Length: 359
Ligand code: PEP
Ligand code: MN
Image 1 (cartoon, helix red, strand yellow):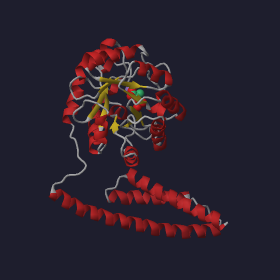
Image 2 (spheres, protein in one colour):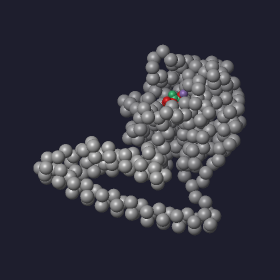
Image 3 (cartoon, protein in one colour):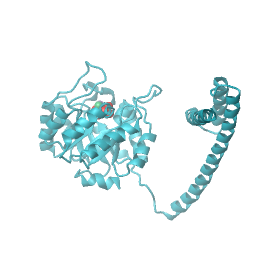
Image 4 (cartoon, helix red, strand yellow):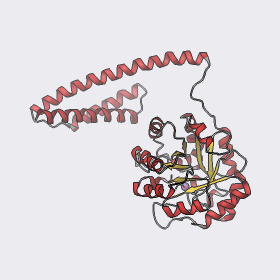
């Protein structure tokens, strides 16, 4: 199990795997006071950004090398393990020199295979635990690719951090939670511990506990949370950092979940419901298959008459109608739109393929 794997890496935590600390190391005082407030509370490592990859120039770009000395001191004064983000080989070299306990690759870096490869090359010959954050966009290939590059360099202690993805449609959160991507990562890489960074998903301190709980409900192995002694005066990500007290309250309130229960009432009831779902899914698939056959017949007709594959007017009518019907069945507009768009995309693909074949 992934939870046991992470324990073997030598982290001290007792329950949920927890990384906590400021977005950025700002001063020795700030790093030490955060570390002291977090030590002994089940935190597995103190996080702090030293080199900050900012989307726009001119924002606080981190204190650089001297911050490593502050982290080192925080470790020796509190016993906490320490970790930071690396974005290029010179960062890796400095962190290895200071014997950091753990590193992570940030979202902007994961986006670029050249940078990830350079980091992997610099890490060759070590086996320091490295967590890889998902890239800015919902591209699971880049995320898995980055983990593979590090694995190919010989690293075996690799984890993943889900921090949401940028989305022009998202209103509530800074980054859309896009849970289906980490769920797919769990399926494809079942032995890679996966933690959630609710701070960068939420962008707002008051939303963090609900996203953290959702991550627990989805069987994430732990959390990375931004904690700052004085959030409103933080030099980066001020709106999303918790005070150490707020962090503790949040962690204490988290409900941990297990994957299965052995209560016989639960097992029996669940197995009936699962049979039900299996049967319904097979009906859904059968219907989709039938729908696709009809669509292909329509495609042949269109093709004979040199009518376009895409019919915007009809498509608009279908969407309006299905969203309305979906609402009557308690299906959200978003869900029905996504579902119909996937079905339509596949229908167009099939019609086009037939057209090419038909000449
Ligand atoms: C961070 O952890 O402070 C950070 C910059 O996060 P991300 O790479 O997820 O944006
Ligand atoms: Mn941050």
